[in-house]
Amino acid sequence: MLDRRSFIKEVGLGLGAGILVTAPWLDVFSEKNHTNKLRCKIAVIGTGSRGQYLMSLLVKNPKVEIIAVCDDYPLNLKAGLELVPGARAYTDYRKVLDNKEVEAVVIATPPIYHARIAIDAFAVGKHVFSEKALSIYMDEVLQMYNAYKKSGKVFFVGQQRYFDTRYLKAISMLQTGSYGAIQSIRIHWDRNTDWRRPVPSPELEQKINWRLYKATSRGLMTELACHQLQVGMWAMKSIPNKVMGVGSLIARAHERQVYDNVSCIYSFDNGVKMTYNSTNSNKFYGLEEQILCEKATFELEKGKFYYETIPPAPGIIQLLHDMEDKAFNTIPIAGSSWIPETAGQNKGEYILDHKPDGDGTKELLEAFAEAVITQKQPRNFAEESYYGTQLCLLGHQAMEEERVVVFPDKYKINYLNHTKSV
Amino acid sequence: MKETIITGKRKKHEILFLAICLGIACILNILSILVYKTDYKELYSELPTVIIIALLLYLLSIGIRAGLYFIHLLILRIKKK
Image (cartoon, rainbow over all chains, first blue to last red; front, side, top):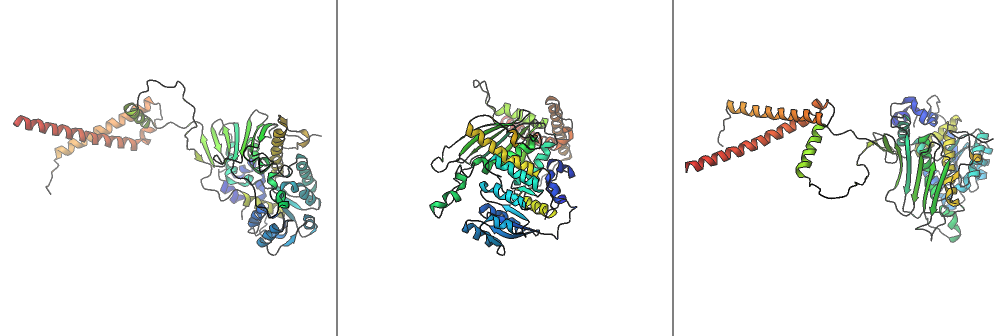
């Protein structure tokens, strides 16, 4: 189990408590709270693939007891019960909320149900962990946030990069200012999958393949962009106020309604742009968040950074290279007058000196359990997650309306450069 | 196998050649620091490279001297005939 000290040690950098400026939510691991002998009672609502993954991590946490599982799809419910045989099984989430023993709920349903379940859970005094995206509607995301504020309960969202040691260290490095101001952010996630899952009978198509339909999903924006746009916002310590975008169906129009190809440009107040590109029909470039600073470029997924100017080779080596060039290279007598600016060959340096164990999901769930036990919401985490979803949905709106969309005042909350409209 | 004797004179001769090669390599290092405007700490940080260059120059000098020696022997043989 992690405590704050060991987590900070893992992140390294020698920043000590300085990491809490970059990631105030890490205070959830505060060693002041002696919680080792305490346990929280959790119910998991939605035991599909993601729910099962979360459960597989939760069952290993000695501070967690899963006392109930809920799913209205029998195969998922059965799979959930196999992971926690002693848990009570429910098919209606309202019955779970009626269970007085349940202190907190983990919601891993499709995103169209997140808001309703979370708002109802807050209303009866449960702590909530909701998978991302919080919803597919901006209104509902705001309602969830307001319900959380009103309840005074703990609210976590499945944005695991906030607990990923690679990201924590990289963002803290960026925010020291040693690498210069951020000039541009380029994000992409390219996959070659159809997202389709086998359906036992046709009437279950939309229930199981909900990612493919406009009524139940925002496609690449809510499934992938949600994880990545928050990284740009976190690095910038600012929320972009404008977005333009285009979406299209190129390769998979015959099998889905949501876009398989999206491009968005988010604009921050200081002029920095954050581009987002994602496709579902080519995986060559995979995923990456590239943060271009004055003095270095960061590739967070790869866990590397590259100085803009590389120190020159020692003089004697340069002399030997020049002699070799003069002796063996051919002398051009004609050719182009312009040399293409191809990408740098700088191999870069690793952000962490070791390979991280996971993607932060385990630590995120441990943090949730800790917060439920101590009943203390970690600073800024709900707000960061709130905007993580709102930015995806704003991008989706820009693509649908084919115009530049300004962040609506009615969805602003008091956070960073945003002020709640009265 | 035939016993070979390296005379004191030969040893001094070879040490002198090695010292000259080391001197040339050091001068090359100093010149390259000045020409390429690199850090003066390379005077000591690049010592391994300097030693390698000195050894390569020494090997080159052995090759040249051996070549000259064989040419010399060839000329002597022609003159005898």
